[in-house]
Length: 189
Image (cartoon, rainbow, N blue to C red; front, side, top):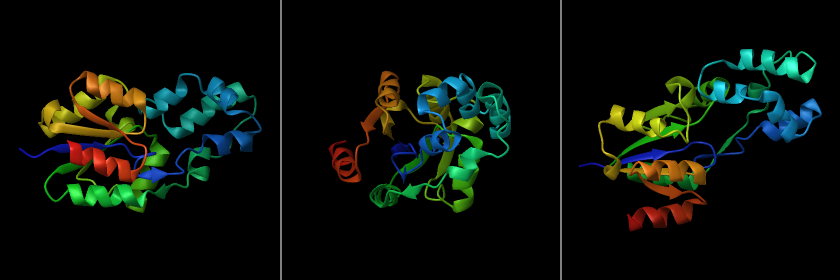
């Protein structure tokens, strides 16, 4: 039976994806204050319960000034981690490789339009699924759609919390630090 590899996007295949520091600086607030103002709305945005425009309407109420533009789109400028891209290409010769990513609408459509998801056989995006990592149902959703067992699945992510969550339901998981160590850990499996 073929293996399924689930790759996170931000921090694994893309770099410079975190636009929060730049947005916070642009707004003249700390990142801590930014997340205080976002409250539960960032999770709702990641889970597709609200879109980016609604997020900024809600954020504006806490911030005290109207945010007139969609800042996630304005400041999102990721790059590609070429070593990871090369590994994915190699794995696809005899395995199915999908993306399992926590994302928001503006980032998802940016990457989609840039062709950054084209390397994957399928993309499972939290904003479209309605659920995000580390919720175990995020992984269960993918396993069900892919019709595969956790034992035949490998998950790669740069978040220890997400790795532990996937491991709890029996998915072999690799904490991503860099492409070279990822290559070695995949060989061990």
